[in-house]
Amino acid sequence: MPDRNNDPQVEMADAVFSGRKLAISNIKIGEFSKPSRVSVRMLRHYDEIGLLKPAEIDRFTDYRYYREGQLPMAGRIAALKDKAEG
Image 1 (cartoon, helix red, strand yellow):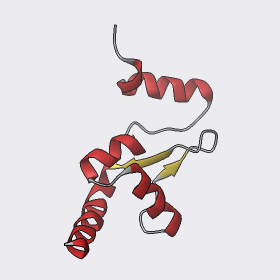
Image 2 (image 1 turned 135 degrees about the vertical axis):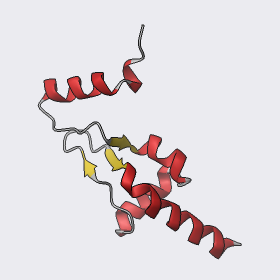
Image 3 (image 1 turned 90 degrees about the vertical axis):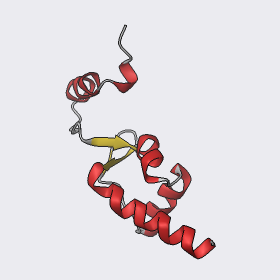
């Protein structure tokens, strides 16, 4: 049986069924945090201070969604933070 949590087709179907507009290219905050090397907690903080805003916030669930194109900026932020701490 396929995993419903990681299937983009199921996610898109759920979004269409619920009336939400959700592009398949959107990445949930937890999934975005891994390749970006930025914790979920810090991503929320960066959103709060305006440093790295999510591409979209679901108005019903308040889930934050990022796009692949935001990874370089997240990488730069992580590198600068590492340099400042080092």
